[in-house]
Length: 485
Image 1 (cartoon, rainbow, N blue to C red):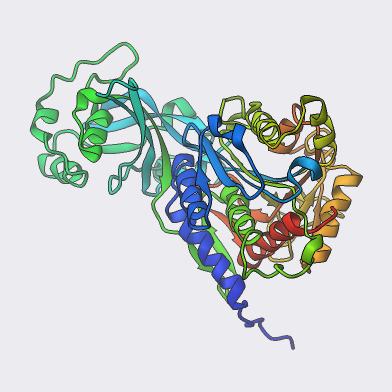
Image 2: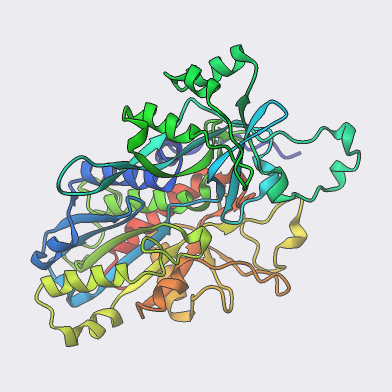
């Protein structure tokens, strides 16, 4: 009779898992994730610069820049400068969520509800009946002569909203499947209108200073069903300690309030929000830092033969909505930045195609693990499992992995001692795409699509393996160090 596997994970794998949970706790939206990554990079000696600083690039540089506060490019320049091309690890920082619409407050049946849009391809049923926080950015009027406004991160915690289901007593067929009418039911409850005690408690949770003014406000309904009461401007002004008149606009998205945690017999799994794609962004950050460390696992592996060209970490935004923004992967920002770095290092314009020929990007976005309860949805011969290593993703017309780029990643994993799996969709289930094919459309370099396997992708909470995050970090570090890939 076989026994339960109670073998604990290694200290290194457990620490990487804890790094994952800590990062996610600090990163309820892409702006906060970009900030968290920035602070980690600064702790590793990277300096924040602007686009104007790229002209003076030199070997030894450890720098990063951001755009929109939600997308980041970090890089270092080795002794060979641009002559050995670039190694790029690319992931994205956004995740599916609900996004607050403008003029969103609606009063109905004595309850304040909030009008929301869907950001990305969320598994909507999982957002019901759980406390949801609100975080993002606000644009605040500037009173300086240098700029009209500034963008400031905001998290309205401890405020929580909730999206309650209809009781089963009113729909006995609910467990057979319910169509979610987005415009009708994606209206989370903010609080009660008339019950003074409840409303006072709700607003005091956000330290509301002007509750009486809010309550007594003339609630005129406008054509779209919203109320003229600027409740989110009010809450933002109090959170940021600025006049409400200075709150010009905002982007607020929901996040899950329940903290991420380890689960399983040996705490070998992680249950948390935003694994797509912080699940690959975080190993990318830690692997990138390890590739510049003096006490990392592979520091003495190659000696003088170690790759010493341009190492880049690219964390994009807006992948979940198509990437067609200045901070998304469809922009030419990555190409512009790489080219400017190379020019600053003394490259001539005509040499840039040669740099691209020597460059490669790993497009790291999570993959689908085989689900024990829905195993029929996985391909019959490519069935990734949790904690059995990163997944090489191949999908004709969706990913841009080819035989050459796949060989590069296989050799990286082999050198790192990391197990590797392969994924293809069922032929009758086409699947999605990610930043790799989008990026290489304007940056013609070798691309390999990879990702750690997870379950419940695009759910409010997803499930991943702790060991896989450690494997991905090792593969990332090896990618930046191995002489030939």
